[in-house]
Length: 321
Image (cartoon, rainbow, N blue to C red; front, side):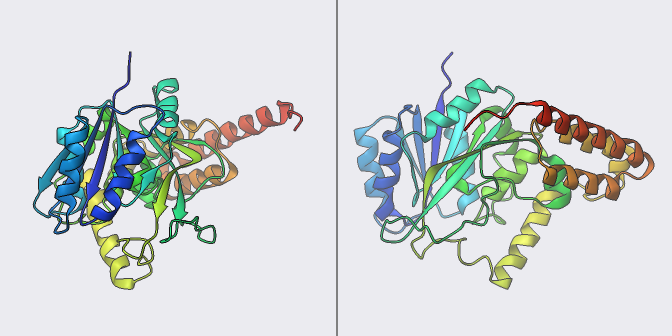
């Protein structure tokens, strides 16, 4: 059975980039079923660009709305979309040709995976590779199954994801996240709603280390380069706290102890097929912090699980390089 794919492009005054973004989707080795472009009240010539594209290809569906911010674009685009897999793209970025095909490869081979994100390749204003820039959200050197991430997101505020353009989600999970009522708080960097929402609703995450997106740095980016501004950081932290409260009313609370939080942590750890030492140490730390009555039992269970993983790795012969 064919897996249908929707691409949601959000745009605000990026007419100069729109052609490049749309062309990168149309050039995919695995064709997409629809491209929904939400124009967020642009005052440049974005409307003309989108109308021209819509006349050329019926899969391109523009939505013109009053300015409401990035999350409002996500909401409007999702409501219009029909795809089993929904991929996101900022209008100033572009996909590499095999990006959709790689995503589908994961989703089709691994039906338990709900959320696939990938590495971005920074590109300078002149279009060249920005090899001197390390993106702060790049987390793993190779493909990695993160399993469930509810505890890490809720109690560590750990951001396990990529920017908007590198995110894709199964519709069955995304339908629990969007439409979101938090539009006023997430006018920008609304990818947080996708990243933390996926964790809150027990989505299983997978990271593709192959760069699938050209992430353009052109001086007008709304997040990259301004994150160190203290006002921006405080505003972000306030909005993130509200987001976590929205998904988990009363967070944090002792109610998690009553619900067997230690067992929840153990379940989440065991959902990672190949955890590293960093993951093991993180979950031991969380067990110590929140486990209380039953923490010794589950600390020991974590240790036993980790010991079995190490034994299996030692017993696996190393293939010659």
